[in-house]
Image (cartoon, rainbow over all chains, first blue to last red; front, side, top):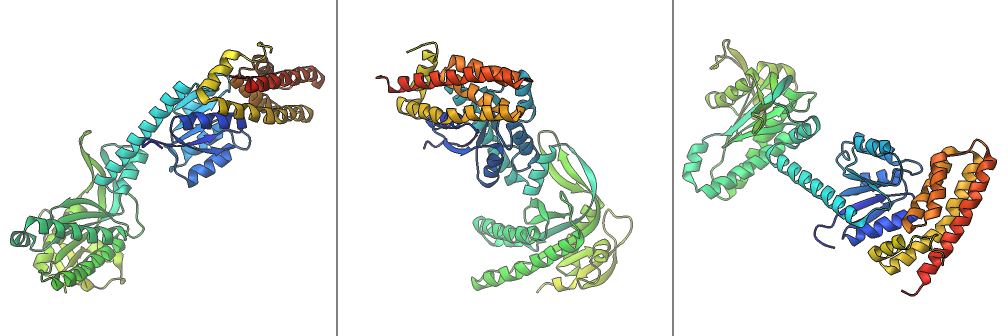
Length: 347
Length: 117
């Protein structure tokens, strides 16, 4: 099979048509699977990967129109390219297929040259779309990518209740100066891998990485039942993972690293900011600023995890905390009551 | 051979694009499936099931067109577009004509399949 060979599913109830189409598609170098009606076609599409569906309209059990409708309603399959191959008459039927999302309509018997061009175009379009999706996923979280692919991209935000977590490595500048850049990159990659694991496993998404610092959101873009609890659980796991990581570093005679984490909970405005050409998904608002201030304040307070009163109230008695009193923060008119998560004391 | 039954140009083009061996397989499949499609059409007429009748006629039309079976295509298409007649007796003559034309087309396709190339 050539490298650009695609997986094509042919749905047609007529045996002669199935045989002929499958021969035509195979002659173009693609791999073919067959379905005798719309119901079987949908079953196969839901369980096996395909690049293209060649769909007949007149079929028993489930006809081509119904298949198109179901594909459109299925988030997993709505982007499956479909070329309708039919001898159904009437322009209104062709229009209906296109309206329902078919890429193209070929009259049967299908002209081989036209078939080649149409399959080529559809498969190329799908390849570009897949490539684009993979690229988007590399730069934004998969949650943001899905949100963007489903609701489309629009600048502007919406107000949501969420917890924001900031974290960074203590004394990172000194660490960078004491070792080679390759070692620093290795360290950062391991650090990020551990932090992403801890955050992701509690339903959070990392939406910014700046040097050794990161910002994570709990409750956006997807709502979380207990965003404060999840953020603090993630913070505790982050600290715990760093403790384990330090054991490994100690074994090879390397200095231990320490992190500081700040968590604040409240209303944030989440959405895309930037320009039409370059934008980023982020959260802005007092809660975000406060989380950043809390993270910075861990140095002053000498503890690993600091949270604001809103987060503490949401935790209830589930996690032991220690009240550190009211602290005036830059940019805040009123003082803020802050708490240290006691199990998060640095080892 | 009666050239009005199967359009030779359509047949030759199909054979050339798909290969002689495959063409023989395709003709065999049509000859195997044809009687079933005709029976389906008759059963739908007896049952008075318009949807089934139209679908069976549509299938025959589609295959007829593939092989260049000109008259078979025309007769099947008439049934597909017209649908069931209010008077079953009026469809009987058309069905008989369609069956006779199918027999001619099948015989012609067999002869073409077996002809020395």
